[in-house]
Image (cartoon, rainbow, N blue to C red; front, side, top):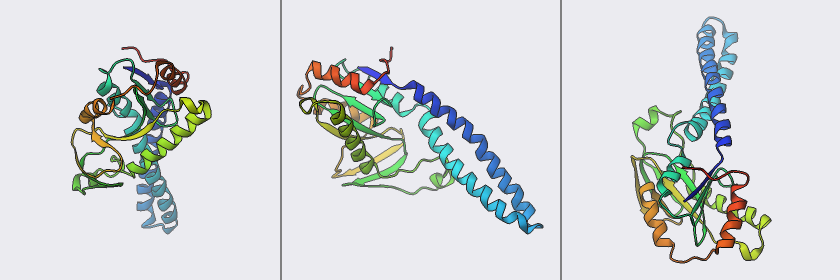
Length: 238
């Protein structure tokens, strides 16, 4: 299994996460102070609203950055560990191509969406819903929203296809499939007629082995795709 990870990007985004966190506290504490002051001095009411609004925005941004780039195991680490026993005709590209995670196999490319939500998640067609829990309510800022995984997956396939069309001849374009992976150990998936393959991390290897029955991508094509998708990033060494 070959793994290419843009560690420079990960380091840069992690630095931003650590820089934003103190600003979040500054705005929230500042808003709390001006709120108390506004009780006797009404002119502080408007600054309170501004500071608290900024605190909310920065808290949301900080949580997103921390969850994605600081808290371990990160998505790239989970995928690399899960797929490490596959042969060298498989290659994983983390943050080196337009989609964050791309898997090259002997038969096709997969544009992977990684989600780290816990709890019960129900999938029906394109619709994803997450069961409400009070524990999730009380960790509002620390918990990243589920979003629309199906739309994300389709968007990543489109971006990858556009990128390949701009750089390869039509004959070299492989099949591209979307995948949605939930990595949290406490996630419970209830899947009913999903439009896009969705699974837990421990189901990924079995799924790929069931899918990889052909070798539609030749060795020269795989080499060309690997060079294009890796960009300037070197293969990770074990």
